[in-house]
Image (cartoon, rainbow, N blue to C red; front, side, top):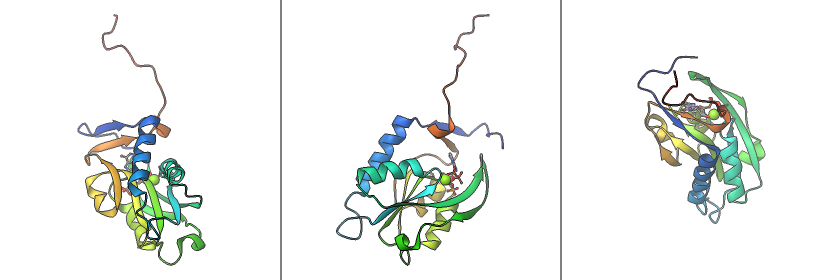
Length: 168
Ligand SMILES: O=P(O)(O)OC[C@H]1O[C@H](OP(=O)(O)OP(=O)(O)O)[C@H](O)[C@@H]1O
Ligand code: HPA
Ligand SMILES: [Mg+2]
C-alpha cells in the first residue's frame, strides 16, 4: 500500500451518507429508462457498487439484479482492470440497453471504460465522481477533487482518538 501524499484529502462517508446519496441517485434515475421510463435490470460493479445498487434497486423496485466483477485496486495502488465475472447474457442482451450499471465511484474511469466497452448501450451511474473519470459516467451525485481519497463505511471502523488537548 502506498502512503497517502500530504496533499491528498480524505472524504469519509458514513453509512447514513451513502444511503442518502444512493437514494438521491435512484430518484434522479427514476423514469429515465428507455422502455416507458423503466430500467430492465440493475447490475452492480463489485464489490463497491453492491451497496449502492441494492439501494437503487430497492427505490426503483427493480427485482432483476446481477453483478459484474472488475478488480483494479489493491488498497490504494491501481493496476490494469481485469474482468473477473460477467453478468448473465440474458440480462445484458446484446449491448446492455435498458440496464443500469451502478458503482460507488468513478476515479480514473478505467473500470467503467472496461465495462462500457462490453456494454456500450447500458446507463452508467455512480454515487461519487472525480474529474478524471467523470466523462465515463452518465449520472452521478457528488463530485470530489481528484486528490481526494473517498473512504467508505465498509472499509472503516469506529476507533478511540486522543483528545485534542493531551493531559500530560
Ligand atoms: O475509476 P477507477 O480509477 O477505475 O476506480 C474506481 C473503481 O475502483 C474501486 O474498485 P476496486 O477495483 O478497488 O474494487 P472493489 O470495488 O472491490 O473495492 C471503486 O469501487 C471503483 O469500482
Ligand atoms: O477514492 C477512492 N476511494 C475508495 N476506493 C477507490 N478506488 C478508486 N478510488 C477510490
Ligand atoms: Mg469497485
